[in-house]
Length: 221
Image (cartoon, rainbow, N blue to C red):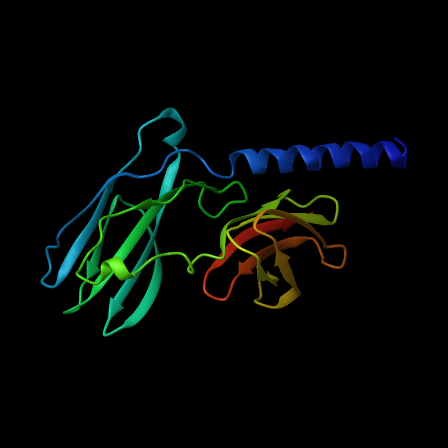
């Protein structure tokens, strides 16, 4: 097989993966019936939701919960990953919060899928002053192909705003073997990373906006 034909086959394969990633990275299985109840422990509430119903939702194995709280005019945002359709939350006196949750399928793999966010009921008198407009720079990041078979790794990031992301690749021993700053436009962004200088093996790719980090384990052949 000549080099031009090999390149064409590889290019078609990568483009097929990219199109599939763009089409399926977000599934249509957001959590349903979000509610807040009094927690079992004193000073707590329990955030609750239902598993979505549908054939496409059968592979959900995690929920991502974002909670933004306000107490004494100080705002804090914390991200949680939970296995069940509920989460206890400790409430300090005078604290208000807003929260949202989305479902995740294939958590931790390159084929990880997220639903859209579902927002739960506000908690506390000051909750109306809180919002998410400045919280999320990027909504999702995907690395492909995995395994990386041709020294080129492709990155797809769906960004909510124009922003910069820091990408680094870490070996199993914790050594940072590659780093790059990614400049994003609002919407879908694609880039390619040359891994020819890395040995075959297992690595972790971290994509971070400074507050939130996505980590994907990859194998380089």
